[in-house]
Image (cartoon, rainbow, N blue to C red; front, side, top):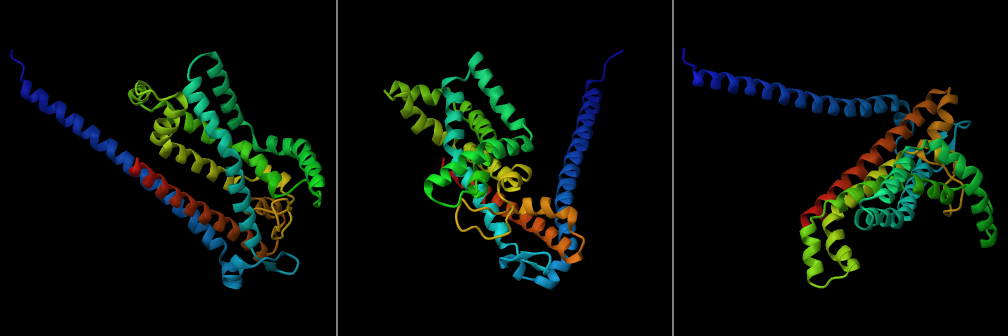
Length: 305
């Protein structure tokens, strides 16, 4: 009794084809669900903030006064506070995260010491934000207050600068981990070719490793920026929670996430609650814009490489 190889092959191909079709449909459905979820979040925030949008209009975005008692709501100070703390934290963390990435990716990529440092970085990423907040409140605030006294300015202790310091420590693991991974992906042939031409270790890192890995490093930086923009608890504990426009980086202020956390449970008036939800909508839009701009920067850098 002969075996019909053609029939067997056809059945196998049909089976593979049907499996491929099912797999593709699952992927399409998953992607569609993701888009629907993002759209649903945006739509729910938009609908819930409609009373504030209707009454306050554009004044909400550029208003500097936030007074629930008088019914005056302006989110400009929160927008400034959020952007200041996030970008200042990014600026502070960048030298440390880049140094850690190069150190673990080039100098100690293997061995016990490398594993220990990698674990330490991962532990930093896993520490709850409230722990960072407590540490900042009891350790960092007195140090910053003493520094402010030496500068001859009002010694608040809490404020934009303190919140940025706490945030910078919180976001270092994200950019450092991704940076280390992309640095380790640099082909060894490129580095060996540079060494064979007489380049030093520093020159190889500066002229070969960093240019090759810069798109991935930028992606890690943008991920850490997104983390900083949305951080709530740690920032709330050390920023001072003052609903005013900061006049310096040492001034107490507030962020969009912090004001929502502080006032949402006590918001009984419709306009107050709607205004807080509109702050959330504004945070959603700002985060989306930052991510879009970041993707374009990463894409441009990748093309240039």
